[in-house]
Length: 363
Ligand SMILES: Nc1ncnc2c1ncn2[C@@H]1O[C@H](COP(=O)(O)OP(=O)(O)O)[C@@H](O)[C@H]1O
Ligand code: SF4
Ligand SMILES: [Mg+2]
Image (tube, rainbow, N blue to C red; front, side, top):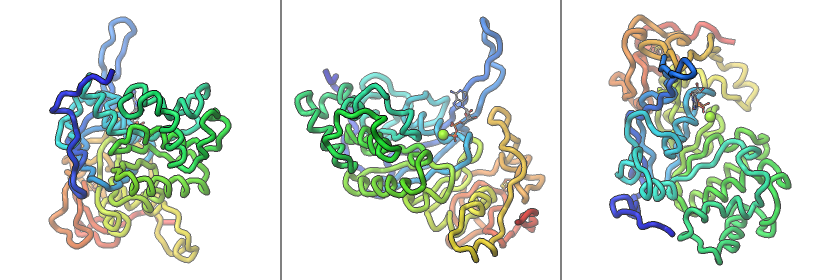
């Protein structure tokens, strides 16, 4: 058991805080669209992830936000090697991992774990909580030898705030929030360094969401974890993220620190998402201009030319259809507005250097 891992994929060196633990470059995942039953012919591709680059720093939480269907889960699965990348590169502690198989893949899977969105469907209803949390030990017995597993699982239950005596219960005996704690305990079992959380609180009641987020934050400090935290709205990730990346139709359109994104967004799509974030103060709610995005999200099988957001963007001009805007820091901006934004006319709201009109629809 436990085949020796070749030295070049042993991943055992420490990464200093603030250095990248994951480096993602031009990552692409296309799902082929085929026609015909017997002789399948490729007629196109769903460009679910289409050239995504970012770093995940040691010890940080990177929020990834975007509407449903923009490629967040696909990105997570490709990073986890659950889906093969079409092209591009993912380096973990400096080692390329996107084309690993066998022992190398097994070693990296131990270090990068995932917590899934729906605690109701992601836990096998016929397995006890002890078997669910301890299942990863079957694949990596070196982490907890058979005789020590029960104790290891009980310790994990304790760590996520559940009674260790619940080890023989079944998932249906728990609430949604408790089930997500079970999912988190399972994610922690192999002592990973990176956890990719794919909408971990989206299926939970608002009152429970904060408890699960607090638990994730507490575990991050305790176990020195780096998180990628996926969500479909900006308000959920605000509290937990050090940096935030905004995705639209398979691409990252803006990325920056908490303050840069929430208070100095320069991409129209981020500004639209922010304008939809609930504001607790009713007076602020009345005075705030809300940007209403018109039109549907285009199909990722046939994205618009140039800037993919142009079919819904109130600032779109001819250049936007002709040239793909690169994710880079626009030279004409400064201060906290100066961060990566993939827009030809990047500007904070109310300050448009391109002379483009403001949002046409405000309510
Ligand atoms: N296995 C698959 N085969 C074909 N298309 C897929 C597959 N998985 C996801 N997609 C498509 O890829 C796009 C992105 O999906 P997904 O990554 O689930 O988005 P999100 O998590 O942001 O909602 C969607 O158009 C979706 O229909
Ligand atoms: S590049 Fe053009 S269409 Fe795209 S977000 Fe900027 S202004 Fe809008
Ligand atoms: Mg998803």
